[in-house]
Amino acid sequence: MRANFIFSEVWIGLRRNLTMTIAVIVTVAVGMALLGIGLMINSQVSSMTSYWTDKVELSVFLCKKDDVFPSCKNKPPLNDEQKAALKQTISGMPEVERVDFEDQAQAYKNFQEQQGNSLLLSVVQPDDLPESFRVKLKDPNNAGAVTESITGQEGVSNIVNQRQILDTYFGFLGKLRNMALGVAILMVFAATLLIGNTVRLSAYNRRRETGIMRLVGASNIYIQLPFVMEGVIAGLIGGVFAAVLLIVTKILLFEGIQTYMAIPLGWNTVAGVITFTMAVGVVICVLASFITLRRYLRV
Amino acid sequence: MIHFDNVSKVYANQNRPALDHVSVDVDKGEFVFLVGPSGSGKSTFLRLVLKEERPNSGAIHVAGKDLSRLSNFKVPHLRRRIGCVFQDFRLLPNKNVYENVAFALEVIGKPRRFIRKVVPEVIELVGLEGKAHRMPDELSGGEQQRVAMARAFVNRPMILLADEPTGNIDPATSIGIMKVLDRINRTGTTVLMATHDAAIVDSMRKRVVELEDGKIVRDQSRGVYGQAY
Image (cartoon, rainbow over all chains, first blue to last red; front, side, top):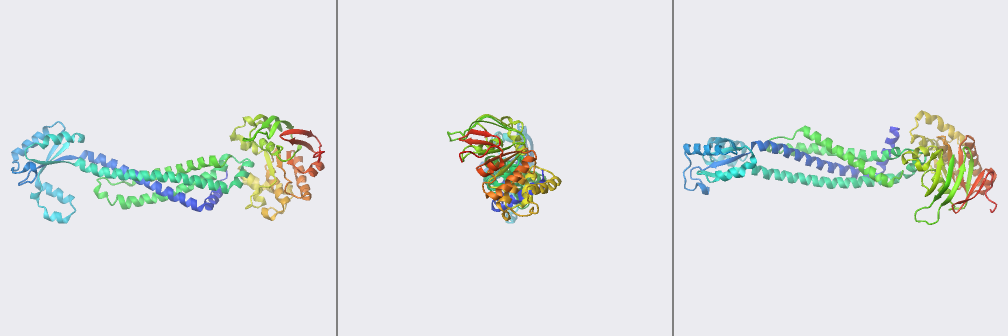
């Protein structure tokens, strides 16, 4: 097999159908980039889910002085003994792994770290923040039962399950991922049809050559390879563009929101995603070329 | 070399057979004219030899191979042993004479050193020495057909099929074409030529097989085109 013969044929084919080739490259690039973004979001969500699942706690807020929560109305805050008793009650529950007490000073410190709003920071005083028990559960799925049994306790203003806050956030990411993957599937479909059309045009343009090749006994693979290679090269170039788009996405988007995500998206993951999307792009191109050739290039 | 045993071919959507129970034997090194009016089955006969079509019934052996048992995968290897020449030359317009002939060897993966050696020899054999770098549109019809013959013969096939090779060429030039075919035949290559050209058939005095409506009506060694004409 003569490599330079094949490559010159491929080059001629790509140049003759320049517009179609560009269409293929763009479609593959966008489709593969979206597929990659979907995969990147997916890996981010799953690594964050496992990270947070270990960390989620129930925050059991206690009534402070003159609290406005209905359950605290006209009741004095708990004294130290009562707090110790409540802590005892909560730690006694079989679902609970650990209970930590967060006093107002600690709460203010955490608030300062998490809050970016300087106006709010300047207004809020340590006394405004409630004391709380941070309840770590053995299994985060049991939060409902624990919440229910603590809710009635004297001196408890309200209970927040951190998991619910995270779930809304993950739900949003999940929708974003599904959208990216949905559009990616459409683009892959469009790319397949485009490649099929390009190969068909190419086969028509070169019907003289292929006719003679058939007559003089060129093997099927020799006749078909230039067409398949055209698809592969268009797919590869599209894949390179997709890789660039993915790297830009990683830098602009994922690093921008990294501060909110405990675990940043690593370059290893990005490299894996790029390799995978390129492989998918090339495989799609090869398959589309072969299927079209079987119909339009009788050997 | 070519053996047809009771071969029939009916094309789809047609009730009249293109070939109707044809049996014929062509030996190695023979020169055979296939004559008959248009639609008598000459082209079908040639296409069956190349396994471009399959017969509906009957057996075909070419170069010792039973075509019905030849897998599609091996058809290209069969075609490497058969050269083909057509009425419309079928040259590549963007390649010169040398490149057109070399193309036939390139696409079956022959080494370049081999190509550089044999292509000039074949170009000389067909009488085109000195014209290797002409483009097809700079050549006369007769010269273009010589290029096509060089391409068909460059791989030294055992069989050369010619489908009305003189159909687009004036009688004087046709004689030159026939001389080349005769030269190729003398190297031991079996030549099977379908033609309408009575003058050529009569002058060559070779074996004549006449088809009419898909049937062999005459098979004559050292024959002429036909008494009726």
